[in-house]
Image (tube, rainbow, N blue to C red):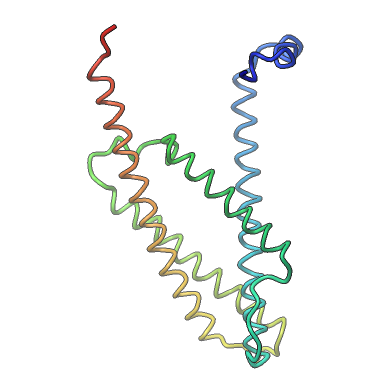
Length: 194
């Protein structure tokens, strides 16, 4: 039995009345912004937590094993965040929602645009990671003991990795959008005979 056919859902529709499409669209924007703020805030906290623990581990002599999370609850919370973000990204890509589906409308892969977005993301990530490592390190050791060069090098390595990952994800989204558009055009070209 479908939800919309249940008595409770029918009673709710009678009480609530018809949906207001403008309010639905505004609510969707609000929830989207909230999800983005929550997701990227938690990702920033996760990266900072990893950086702080790794820096503390290095300065303590690295004698014992490095522990990524302080307790299992942290691990489950961040694993759940990763799962939710992955599910949302996959659903948006499958529905053709990536970049308002302009990818499927272009004839050639927009390499310049992809390189620009990937470059901005990689540089911002490299600077943010280097800054977070330096801030975490200054909280643990005196400022003269901070490994400035190593932190910058770590940020650059992560920045290059993120650059490649973002470029690959954009290319993958482009080819997915092209395939989806070709499938829709093929379905429209051959009408079903009844």
